[in-house]
Image 1 (spheres, rainbow, N blue to C red):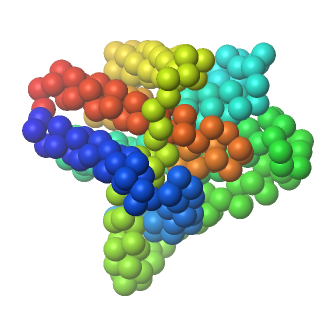
Image 2 (cartoon, helix red, strand yellow):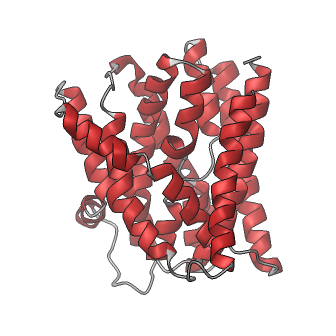
Length: 307
């Protein structure tokens, strides 16, 4: 349990470091945009490639991919229902903070350390469906349904495909998944290089969130954060309970599903919020809160399992 707390608190410490350095003037208010570009286009794609180095395709676990994909669609729909009479900024904020699970930067290390090798494979299979949405799917749908300052594009297959293919992490994820299905592997030196670069992804993602973080005393905005976090974890805990006690899958798979549904918001959600002109400071604030809550809930879960 000490390992869980140590890793979790390390994430919080890096977020706090980013916020502290911004407040001290080391970072300027918009320096997070450069970090976001590095994360989205360099370190995250490299981390994805590295995660497939020892990936073993298990077709019986494709149910987890479907659950990861549908879980995102459910929360996207719920976000639009909650904000159907609200502003575009509210729609963007709710959708990107309700949908998406931070697997690679947060949940996977816990699965690897406490649930074993099988859990890593199962978590990755869930993340395939999750990442289809997180790395471009949610952005493609939301930008088509919400009229922002950008040129409006109606929701159709062409506009969705254009948005998806414009997302570097999504393209890399799909290419690596095809390679896994075909049992193709990249040369080992490639994995060595991507491992070196991708190793910085967790640190940069957490630092970026800290740079985006901004405390707010605006009661309306605090109400938004409270509501979106409440709905996210009410749904997450309900889905975790349903999977753990009522889904006819193996005990190992149930443990993985419970863990992933307790995950915090995805680290790249605020990047897409910024791209769509949303309130990035509020997004960073909400994201940080979900990390703290997930630390508490996952710690309680591992205690329940007596790990």
